[in-house]
Length: 271
Figure (tube, rainbow, N blue to C red):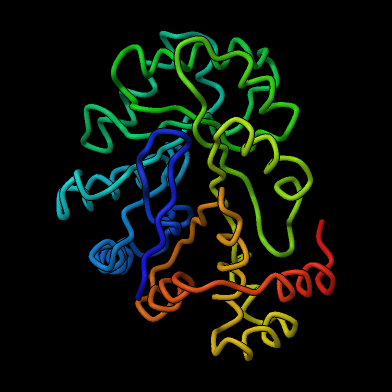
């Protein structure tokens, strides 16, 4: 198995092109077994958020880090937008996340989604306190679409936005393929894609199955490879199943031909 690695922003730090997500974990015991196996297999990129299971997912990631060593994992967590009202509230919320993670500093902190009641410029400047206070090495955003991301980029004063995490899949190609990828390429921002396999929907897709038969792959592997074929995209996938983990790992180390990607775009209507 080949582990493909991609740069986070322009940081000169590279992580696996597939990261393990922690949204909606049902069985933490099974998830722990799978996460440990994934990390031992070369995945060094884990995503979580204070919102996930009311902080339990961050606690879970902390347990994983104690098993494998923090130096072996790039950790991303996300802050709820309600905290963005002031630098003090941002710092307080961050310290709570770090306590759950068992860390003094996280690699990457993201705004989970924009707070509609506060100007984006204010949100970003408050969020920059995380780097000032040594609570995060890097900052980024999540669910920021082109105009919001451009406003956020303009608002930074002391640090760069290195990631925008958004929904991206063969069924949901907007906004990545309709402008976001251009903005991110221009500014050196990595796109983290969530819901890439659409909660298993891609596994039952006949069009993806047709393409998969040409590569001796599965529809799930085709869907993930489609996403990471974009040089700026890292795919986040959640699994609690060891065989599914092996399937996910098999999505790396090869590439879809451009005509097959075009076939997918032509045959699968996207929102």
